[in-house]
Amino acid sequence: MQTAKLLNACLNVIILLSMANIFVCVPALSQSEQKGQNLFQKLHCVECHSVAGSGGCLGPALDGVMSRRDKAYVRMRLNENDEAAFVKLIGHPELLPHPRFKSADVADLMVYLNTLSDRKVEAVNHHAVLNQPPAPQEKPSQNSSTELDIAGGKKLFYDSGCLSCHTVGGIGGQIGPNLDSVGAHLQRLQIELFIAYPVSKKMPRIALTAVERRKIVDFLMSLNEQSKH
Image (cartoon, rainbow, N blue to C red; front, side, top):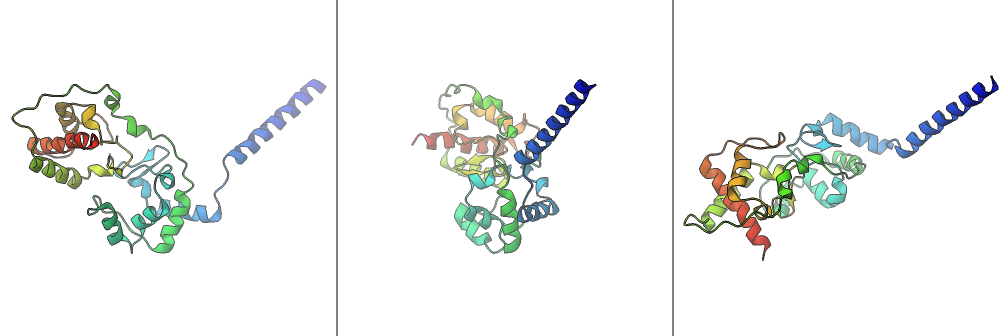
């Protein structure tokens, strides 16, 4: 009987210590952080962005966003009074119109965003083929890309909202892989097929003609050439 009571007492202590450890490891949000979280939920931000692997894919994942972007950039991205300054900063019109908010709401959102720890976003690795060895370089053909083709492909790339998920030159989303050196890993035909028939469920199938797809590939292949200089 005494042994049973002792074991029961030990079990209760273990349970209490486990509960205490949970609360220590996962601290509750402060009042200001909770206010930001409530606003984040009220604005339905996860319809476009993901947190901890859950949410939309139109915008970049927000895990660790405050460690990837400085406060001035995030504030400029969200504040209703800073749209012109943000466009000047990135060098082109916004690729995907983003809601903007009053300064007080932006401050609350930033307090909450600062609580989101950085984590490896699984969606970034959907295109596992990017981990393959560099593809053999194709021989130049009579249909080599012209500067006009590349410029047209760049415009199509931006207009199609590709930077919502992919990064080029340090600008863009975190959902898909960085495309700065995609031409070093994939051949032209592979890239064109990925655009026409996406292998990732998170990548939308964009309505493009064959000519438009080839122009986008011209632009993406040119990024690899630029990275060599």
